[in-house]
Length: 263
Ligand SMILES: O=C(O)CCC(=O)C(=O)O
Image 1 (cartoon, rainbow, N blue to C red):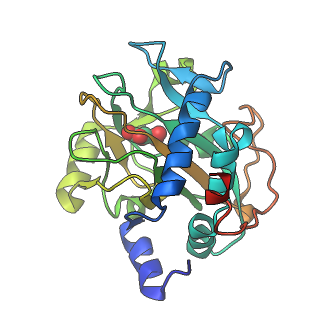
Image 2: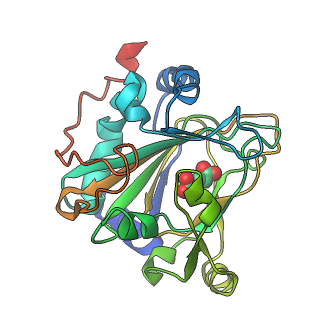
């Protein structure tokens, strides 16, 4: 898939591009079937929910130990637009699956930008990084969709506090302070990204985003593939491979049918 110049301009302005149904049903089924193996993995890559430690809040690194997610990360439909938007070769800084189980099992995410910990902990020089957000399940108004503030990346790094509890749990999150968020939301509005399983949103790493508790009975899994420009490689070494991948080899797209070939 090749983006038009107008789409690139929209991304630079709005901080995201959304493609409903970019993956087909067969590809979605393959990814959905791979989820139990990922979330049941025993290891530090899987971070449990605070209220229900039997549920995974985050599973980092699935692209490294699950074939379907590995193929997804080099699918031309996903990788080519990222290369175009970052105007560079890219590598995966990290991947994480937010499986957001239903019945309140998938807890909320307060408003934040993803870039601050990558900059301050991992030594990522510039915000030249994109989260390709792949909807593994349907994201509807009732399953706690990802919400974003369009255009918020243009404000650069915002006032935020490190959420200590999150750091203690194995990940890092900077909550945006309330007056700053109020101003941003009033200026730009808030958009809920809603679409069927297989939709993909390409989101700039400084776009403010968050989500509510998933109190519906349905799971709402999104796989976030975090691509960084090769010329913007991280210099830090504090965090493990699954949060700060040290292999900066440029990714090459595989055949566009590589994921469905696993069926
Ligand atoms: O998937 C969600 O609901 C939000 C996740 C999020 O904000 C994050 O992982 O940074």
